[in-house]
Image 1 (cartoon, rainbow, N blue to C red):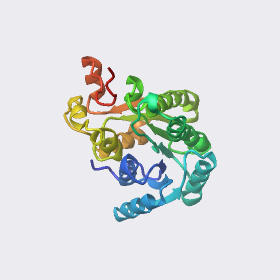
Image 2 (tube, rainbow, N blue to C red; image 1 turned 135 degrees about the horizontal axis):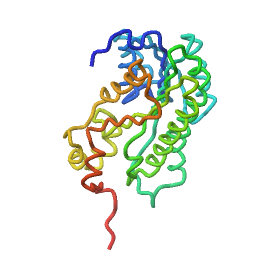
Image 3 (cartoon, helix red, strand yellow; image 1 turned 120 degrees about the horizontal axis):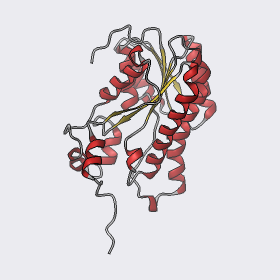
Length: 272
C-alpha cells in the first residue's frame, strides 16, 4: 500500500521487537506515512540491519537496546525517544516470545519467560510511556499485538495464548482508563503471517503448513505488510475514534474455525 507522507507526519513512534518480522514491517509502514522511528530490541545486530534498511528507504530512524522484561530498560527507551525527537506519540508493543511445547511438558521457566516478554513487557511499555503519550499533541496511540488464538485456546502454546489473552484484557482496561487522557489503546490480532519466523517454527517446522492453510478462507498466509496497514490506520487520524478494539487481520481464519469446529492437530502424542 502507498501511504501519503503526511498521514503520520510529525509523529514519533517507538516499536519494540522492531528489528525483524512484524515489528520491522510496521516500522516501514509508519515511516512511509511520515513518522520518525525508534526501534527497540535485545538483538543489536538485528536492529542495526533494520536501521540500515529503513534509512535506505528514506526513513528517519534510531535504535535502542531494550529488554522489555526489564522495566528500567523500557523507561530508558521512552526517555531516549524524547531526547532524540522531543516527543513520543505512538508505542507499538510488539516484542514477543513463543515456542511449541505441550502444557504437560512445559517447564515453569518456559512459562515464565513467555509471560515476562509478552504480557509483562506490554504492561511495562504502557506504564513507562503513559506520560509521554498523554502529552502527545496528536492524541497518543498505544498498540499491542494479540492473536485470535488467545480466545480459542492454543494447544502447544499455552504460555503465549494465556499471555496474549492477558494483553487483550489489559488493553481494554487501558482504553477505559486512559481515554480521557486522549490515548487510544488497541490491539491487532494477526493470523498466520507467512514472512515471519513464527510461522516457520510453529507451523512449517511442525509439518502443519497445509493444515493451517486449510483453515484460512482466503487460502493463503498473510504478510507483515497486512499487519502494518492496520497499524497505520489505527495510528493515523483515520483511527482517531477507535479505542479498546481488537483489529483481527487473519484472512478469516477465526471465523472458519468458529463455524466448522476446526481443531488443530499434530501436536499431541498418541496414547494407548
